[in-house]
Image (cartoon, rainbow, N blue to C red; front, side):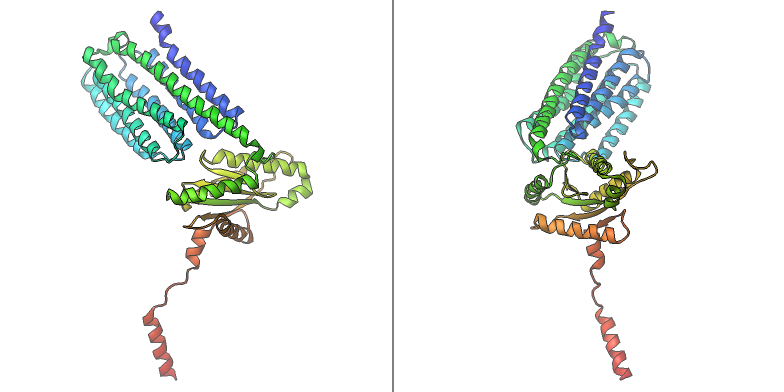
Length: 407
């Protein structure tokens, strides 16, 4: 009974931390990566509970827990990388999971010894965290909290590589039937508890720091939408553009404008119009990453600076926002009324100022408006389409010959 109770400490602690991250995300209106931290802890807790309650000698035990632990690792690392403005290569994680699962299946079929299974799955998690650390190290962002996060991720990776090997030096074989009575099982509860608390404390500290920064920047926020006001957005762009050029990273600007918004105010009133603006701002905030910057720069005009993002992925982001807004219901309007928005997209060129970039994106937005609204226009695609083809010298010579003969 005592073992059963102690085995519940780690998953209950993980659920507590998951709830903490959910509260921080909700109350602080923080970015989605904070919610991702909470989801990772929920997945970890499920893995712990499965390990604790399923039969120790069940052949599917390690397969089942591997799914949840792998998902937890992936969500955690993706959230940490998104916070740093980096994109995790998810297909690499899928590859590691598949290879590990196949090797695990072979080990389960060949022997009843749990030791090979422990080494296989832990090596898989270690590789995942090593790839996540490598991605984090490519980010230029380096304050004390970023260094602390990298340190705990390195500790996680090292633990997955070292712990199973060291433990199994003292307990060389572990029959599946007595797995929960082994030294390894006693040690893993302690280690996972320490890792969970350490990881959570660092990430909670990072989330609280973001919340404090958000409160400090509240004066720079548009009170209606919660996004940055025009002055704050332009100031952010003037720092992002030089940084993007220095670090050789793409920066794409998306301008959005709600179609026929004046009719909303004229027909349903300004309160209904304000709710539409607030809904659009909330939609944008929900769909962008933590490293992106969004602002309301005019009445019904919004801007998104998509950091470290090439032109085509940014265009797809604008398209997703356009489709989501077209399906959005608006309080204060008739139930059957749906509104649309038009978008202009432009990617910064070398040496380009904010005003030059904005002018190109705004011109693309104007084309979207004049082409029927409810669409995304890309300044870069349009530029390529408008480039005239180079004249073929052979065709020129032939035409001249024809002219001479006709003369």
